[in-house]
Length: 251
Image (cartoon, helix red, strand yellow):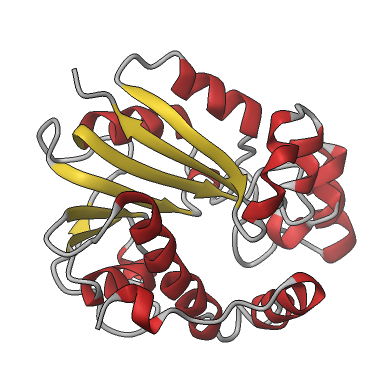
């Protein structure tokens, strides 16, 4: 059965927001329902954009316990799950089969090794997102693709657990949160597992890299509202989670 024949029905408008909110608000205690939904949708979106995934060699960069890797493999892709933390890989039990423990900013693969790179919610969790962007461009083969998604800093959830204090800045925001809560959050403390990553700066990194071209930029959960991504400032606040579709130049 093809992906198009087993497509999931996505609610629209307020119903879509309610669906995502309900699953997301329980993500810390029970992450599987939220990420499995996103993973199923990711397979559909990728096949709409780049064609059948069957037979493609893909990197699931920042794979965590392997929600996306499992669905991508279910679509027939040859997937290499990559993460730098054995704890993250083991969050749901055994790490995903065939995992590689590696720094996303210094990948142990030759140039052009992958047909595509799927990178979901990694950039905000690395202190050197430019290095990750550069490595993605390097390991994708000419004509290949990359999907890069992350929670941009000025979005409502940009500070993760410290939101909305993150709107006070990367120094004052975390400091005030810690003062009012008796310490940093138990997960994704700023400067340890969370860093500010902005849409405009990330787009500029890709624009000046001669190896790649930007295909499209859109809000992950509401891609139909992609017009806001053309407005600097506005996109930093309203996107919530930014997606950049990238193509490796053929030459």
